[in-house]
Length: 319
Image (cartoon, rainbow, N blue to C red; front, side):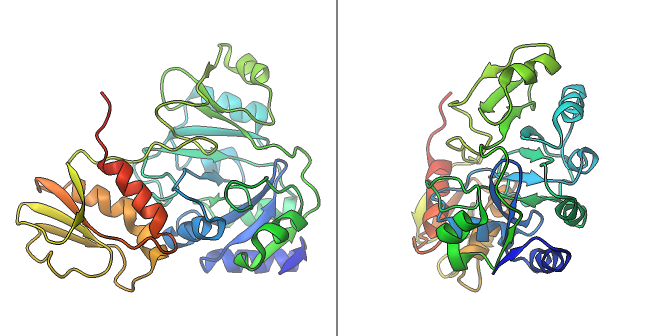
């Protein structure tokens, strides 16, 4: 459905989001493909709808700064930038709180989370307040294609993959938000966007380190750093020893001796498997097992993205 943004369509949007469905909506930058940030399967549905080849971190959108800073650790730099530019086209990458409710899939398994307060209509801001965990949303277009700045762009690119597209007219900026990483001591620009670097530096009173193509990726718009466990991880396993932890897609046959076993999707759904991937890896990594073995996972649907992440997790780290 493509509907004008009205009180009735906003109510429908809230109901769909609460039910784990996707809704496309307008911000000042581009149209976003939104899901309840706290529902892992809803977040996984975003990747499925976009045909995203890997699990990049997603930006969580909030009604105001206090809501955003309830799920991440904000410092004086973050509060100063928020006061100057929110609502607006600035995304901040900050460390997640210990009780952050946002799905680990939205953070791509990292300890940081990208957050922003977009410039939206009063009606959609009221909708955002109904989701204290935020609404995660990349651009509402197939992966690799032009970002959408009208509702018609979304409909042409994603079609029936989105249950509801809220039409609030053309985006005023038409360019993605600038992304600044404040999770470390030195502020880093991770993505150029619809906010001049000089304006950001003026508020911070220090220059930004340009890190738009770093080795460690923490933001949308970059090649993602993929979560790598501390334990050795081996792919293509058909069995597990007693001193090994095991990660399987659906069928646990052959892995009964594993010290810890995680089944990604008892129902055989790659969307469910994607939603469970990072939390399962973290639990296995925290176990007493010597190593982690992973069964074969078919590449249909989100299986390709799951395998991409696992291959990166299994690769040797560079010192």
